[in-house]
Length: 160
Image (cartoon, rainbow, N blue to C red; front, top):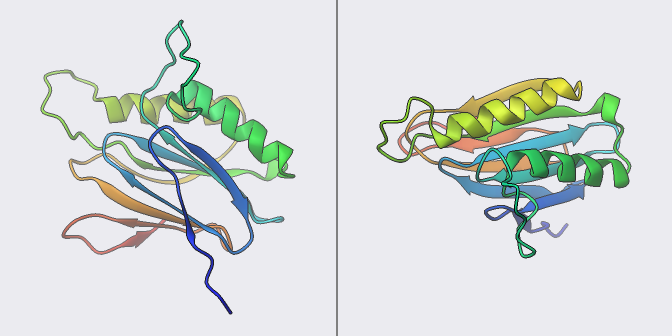
């Protein structure tokens, strides 16, 4: 049987797939929001860069760039693909403090907090997360079983 290629989700992108597919992304301060409906094995990933969309919109903006817009876009795409909101489960990864800053809350923490708030607001359980720290992450989301493999430099891979 031929192995299906990984779907790479780039910065500010959103992707939806199902079945035996796998999604992959690299994260620093960005956060990957992953939604999964286990019955039809439909999953989606948004690679969130910043927490809140500014008042002015860029016509060329990627749908996953801002947490608030990415959440709405990903949820709608999941529902359009046949997922049921009451069955959705969420996972988050990323949000590292990659830059030396004097700000008390990092970009990654703002992304994580915004997404957590949106999940609660929509009644979607956050079943696991792998966020924070100072190192980037390599994340692989397996749609056959909903598992997320998180790899960091000098650490063993973790399944969340």
